Length: 356
Image 1 (cartoon, rainbow, N blue to C red):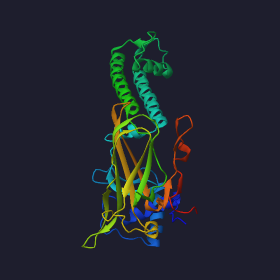
Image 2 (tube, rainbow, N blue to C red; image 1 turned 120 degrees about the horizontal axis):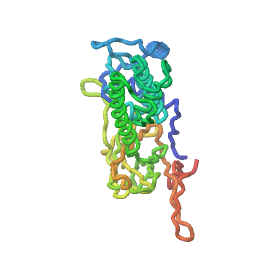
Image 3 (spheres, rainbow, N blue to C red; image 1 turned 90 degrees about the vertical axis):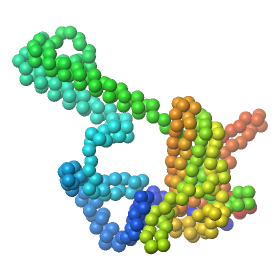
Image 4 (cartoon, rainbow, N blue to C red; image 1 turned 90 degrees about the horizontal axis):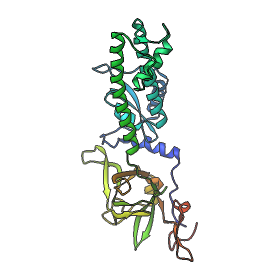
């Protein structure tokens, strides 16, 4: 019977992040204390109170902008206090990371707001716009839309010095807004993204006479990623000679960490020998381990001529032992190669191991 550690569920994954963060984050927090049940309950109540509180409430910093924020690491929510936030410093980051519906909704709302502001400015002037019905704010709003968009239908136009000054300012705002919007849309569309598929579970199986940790990856686009490089890291707690506990990153040696042309699939292999941090691990050690495995891959996408990156993380409990990946490449009677991606995440008993 093969020994297998079953995949972690979403609840187990969330619990893993809880344990990971309690012991010390990836930044290496020494001597992170272990929480008691009362402390965890108090933290949960505090988080609920913060979620139900007004977004304006928070702790002030020296500049008055430091607030308590809720961060998300995987499925774990974290309270961050004392960090000063500035919307204008992060506006590009927010615009690049927002979803497309939120991106266009935000821009549409800002567009309507700016036009309402300029319509009110035109309204403050005495008949500053020709052919606009007196006191009709709607006419002034649509004139503002035509001006900021450089449409200029011609029926309405500024007829006073005040109107010309406001129109000049609005045209300047419109030109700048158009440039910013075009740049953001182009940056979002042109940002390279690798479409890679990572196997749901790593496996540990005998390969060429040695225990080997394997992770299968596939290029879902089937284009060529040249000079692809893969790195595999293990992240776990380690205690120093002084007794401090730090979160350590250790890179695992790979049997082949480069692929000249990654177009179909690639199985990353780490041989578990005497030099490996995994040497001597048993199934129960893996099941109780707090280790996390992180695999990164980058290369040159020949289609866009840009570098692409991808990353995937696994908990130690997601490793399946004494099972190999199912074959996904077959050749039919006519000699045609067939790739069956429906079996990409499937595993089979290792050679020489009986089925469960």
